[in-house]
Length: 346
Image (cartoon, rainbow, N blue to C red; front, side, top):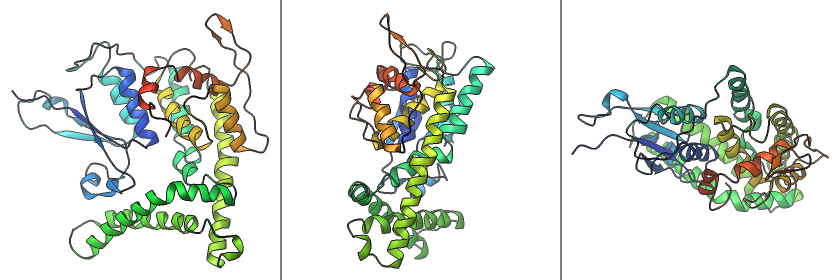
């Protein structure tokens, strides 16, 4: 019997946006046998391997490979298309399993619609997803690699990130060496991608390699690199993140982005907040108020989110709290969150 072709999710278990796709799969109630999952080791640079670049020239995860509708019968060769950005992947997963469309589903779980039903709520979702969470100033990977504010925290960051960065550097250098040596034939576009990513990785490594040196021990280049690093860290954490958190609080209704209805925007926010919270020292067990206080402390400068949300839970009205804190408490109770973050935040 010919098997029915499945969608394939390429993901990393440490990727913030891969978590969003996985949350969507859980929220939509897909059966365990309805998709295939393939891990991509980002530390080893597997997302820059030619085999992966043929699927996604941007070298990003998640990537969802989906069979074209006219090849779903399994009677002949299947043709696939690749969805290469988180927003498109979540929208596809939402539409592909619903109350009116459950193509080849093997699950009896509910299939809630996560896409907003009105123009007003769609607009809020778009603002939160496109203009805030996926903006460059909110980039959680930038926050990851500049997560230091003094010499001690720089040393901690180096201990955490250097091993993976050096693996990636080695992989990228290897890909370029093979191309230059003629072992593989690649386009100028691919060479440019490898070169740019190698250069960016090398710059970060240079700063982190010197993390244990006192500033007086650094040469002129080392001092300039460290100064530039701390400027970038200040801008990302104390300037940009202040703006992002303030915007989120303003746009959200609470406890979820649209109120009581869980939507696609909440998937993106959950993944983003889990990563940013972890970088600020938040754990999965922290309640919303604790999470917010740790975020406020990491941002520094006396920053405080507005406590303007009142929520009644269990028949008891809580005092005024932040919308992000209420969101954290609400999303933490969901089965999808408990499964995707069962081993902790990332």
